Every structure is written in C-alpha cells, then in structure tokens.
Length: 394
Image (cartoon, rainbow, N blue to C red; front, side, top):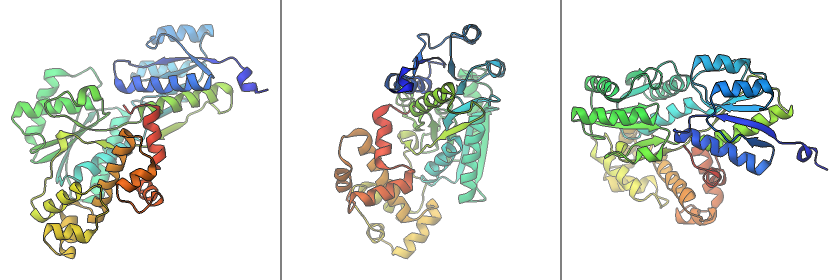
C-alpha cells in the first residue's frame, strides 16, 4: 500500500496574469505536475482575485496557493494567509513565503555575454525601478561587463511599476534617453515589453537596429518578438519549469515534508534566442571580422584555431591578441560557443540521438560533446532537451 496514493489530492489555486506568456507557461508547468502526480487538483478559475482567494482560505476551501505577486498590498494580505504559498514572480519579496523563479543575476550576465560577443563597447540598460528581478538583472549585467572591462561605458534608466507608464509617453522618454547615448550601443532591456518599446523609440529617431542600436530583451514571448519589423533577440526564461518546481515544492509543504518557511529556488538561465535586433558585429578589425564569419559558417565542423587564423589571413598569435582585444574572449571560446549553439538548436528542433548530434557537429564522440556542453551551459544535452519536451520556455 502506498500511503501517498491513498491521500486525497490537495486543492490548489493559481493566481497569475494569464495575458502574459510567461505566466501561462508557469501554469502549464503546474498543470503538468498536477496531472502526472495526482497529488494536487487545480481550481478551474485560474484568475480568481485575491478577495475570492482570501474567502476560500478562510472557509478552508483551498490547501495551497501558487501566486504572482506584484503589489505591496497583495503581498501583505498573502503574508497573513494560514496556508502554504509559493510565489512565482520575482518583483517583491513576501516575508515567510517560498519563491521559485529564474536566476535573474544570471539573466544579466548572459545579456552581457551576448552583447559583448557583438563587440559592443558602450552599453545601456532599461529596467523596472523598484522591482527585484530588474535590479538583479542590472547587477548581473553591469557586474559581468565590469569584470571584462573595468572602464566600460554604461548607461542605465528605467520605468516605474508596470502599467504606470506605457505607450507613446514611454517611447518618447526612451527616445530622449537613446538620443543621448554614444553609438553604436548595445542595450539590454529587462523585459521584452521594454525592448519592443525601445525598438519603436529607435525607429522614431531614425536610428538603425542593430547597426546603431543593438537591442536585447528577456522573456522570449514568441508572439511579440517575431512580430516587429526587426525581430527581437531575447533571453529564454524557464517559466514552464518554474511552474513545475513551484507545484512540487508546494506539495511538499502541504504534505508536511518541507517546512513552509522562507525558501528561494532560482532556476538556471543559459540561452539567448538571437534574432535580427542583435545580428551585428561592432568590430572595425577586418581580420577579426573574417575570423568570426569563418567560425559561424563552419559551426558544424571541428575547426581549429589555426584554421581560423588562416581564414583571417594573419598569424595565429597575432589573431589571438586582436581577437581578445576586439571581443574580450579567445578564438577557442568563440568556436566552442558557436558549436554549442548549433547543438542546442538540434536538441530543440530534432529527434536526433545525442550520438547522431555529436557526429553531425563533428565531435569525436558523445562523451566529449557532453563534457563541453555541460561546461558551457551547466546542463547535460539530455537535461537541456528535456526542458523542451516537457514544455516551452517563456
């Protein structure tokens, strides 16, 4: 006899903004857990407001909650509820409540890595003032840039709470900000919605994207990022996995297996969906340009540094110095980064076996592919593929 299976499932409510793809994916992750585990039953009304939920809690009609928390008032109410709660939005902390989210400092570091790979020397950041996720992304972004170059030229700005400022007024303020920045510039926006407004602001000024302003967002909301005349590059966030982990953790709380106290789980972020808005290389050195072009054209091959130097028409030692000076990394690091990006694409979009992918990308064997993939992404190829089989990133 399995005592867990004999227990009735817990009654769980989800409070999320279903207009946003990120939170729709969070819900899908939680639903997957509910359907596969049988340990929780989710309420039918996903968007029940906090007054409804408070009444349900008081009447004992709900055993646990997964919630998006943006406002201070809602956070105060939630802190008083006498049932387990897991927060799935990193906007403001809720005392005594667990939170499952992405590693937002890593989001910023990944943004820095992507923009520096373009040869950017000037950087901008647009975030949401007072929001924890935005501040952490800013810290990760600026910190990674300063590690690469202590004298980096950096400009930051932001908007207030979501919905407080939008549309033409926000675009006009962004345009005034962009106009003051040296160019070319790489700008990281903490959310796709800000990045899309920045594209409009650049267009309003007559600036070219990405030649004058390269723009990178976060969230990868596929409905919007491909919608603009210049498709938006964006960092993928593990929203589906956040829902799954939140439901798992909440169940542990409700079963009494984990103490329902302050606990934070931050999931890794490892990939940029690169599109036209950052498809540029801000490098004047023609030898480096030739080298990068050669590397990207031969991503499926096991090329060597000597091959790259030959394609660039300069000595290996000379290219190494010029490459690091222009892009802040070695030729080998660039080769590895481009090869792993190709492996990621095959893992996402095909059913090829790992051994077949290793062969297609000219790795000597699958163990060598596994080692390099884990070094670059923090995951094994199978772990990476599993995230796309179970659900999509928001």
